[in-house]
Image (cartoon, rainbow, N blue to C red; front, top):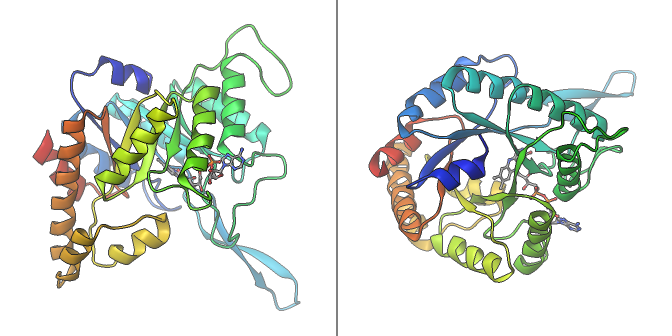
Length: 316
Ligand code: FAD
């Protein structure tokens, strides 16, 4: 079922979760162990991220450069199929521009369609560490909007090298939004202009980057509505679970932590204390967002269920 239909049919705020594929060589059990304890909150869908291979070039003894893979998280498509099969809920794969040619994207989307997957979250993808700035595949897409256009074309029966009046895809498409603006955007207005273009093209809902100050979300939502964006905006939430995340999250995700939260975290002597602060903060954020009428609370689990379970238990 489509995410927008879940939202339209809902009588109260829904809970959804994002999980990461395990690192190459690890087992699917980690995914099951993350989702299973969260099933009691009746998530209508679970998102599964997609990650490009992280690699670097090392100098060999003969002086030539050798490509060495540092980290790989394959399996997004298979995990989505397994989730549908085991938990009987929808799985939303993230599809990205980086690392894919248009033909490879088309093949992946055909596979997803054949597996009965009704939704995709369309993204540009993060630059990998060795790249610095995002580099598009020479035969791929530079922006999420270009990838979006390809998915919409397929929904309309227009494939890359042919058209079909027969079976074609029918994906419900989500895109990303950034309450504190995307790190490359010169300002929030420009970023929202690009977001609006994606919605005008056919994106049916927006999921936001994590934020820790609800005022940032409310201001973003208001600005989106003023710009004429009417689709559901789903807030993305991540509970802080360690002292280190106080500095790591702003660095990795280009977001701010409010003073009150930082003050509380600075008092924490260990990760256990920081986790308790993070959970309480996230519960309060969630309560206020629910009261404001958001359709879904979407939690970034980082593939660990415990904190998110504590939060959802306090709300459900
Ligand atoms: P875009 O919409 O392409 O925007 C990128 C930048 O370009 C923005 O600054 C935008 O303002 C600007 N821009 C957009 N269109 C144009 C244009 N036509 N001309 C000029 N500038 C333009 N990354 C992953 O690798 N895997 C994941 O699974 C993943 N999941 C995510 C889930 C969510 C909910 C969010 C919020 C992010 C996720 N990301 C993921 C990170 C995301 O891929 C990065 O933030 C990426 O840098 C931007 O993606 P985007 O889809 O917003 O890009």
